Image (spheres, rainbow, N blue to C red):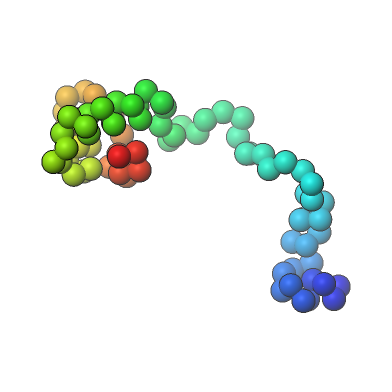
Length: 81
């Protein structure tokens, strides 16, 4: 109990950590999330952005939508580009 008070965490959190000690961190999903970009989508964004260097990420997003290149959100384009 002294240790828990010294490091400033709750007792249940301490025992959760102790139970997980030495185990590998695992993701809680077995397959990709619905919102994650696929590799081909990332490649399409990069290639399109390289052809249109002067454009911002929001404008690129809507240009790609209009030309049926890829349909992603502006924040996804920002993260990839």
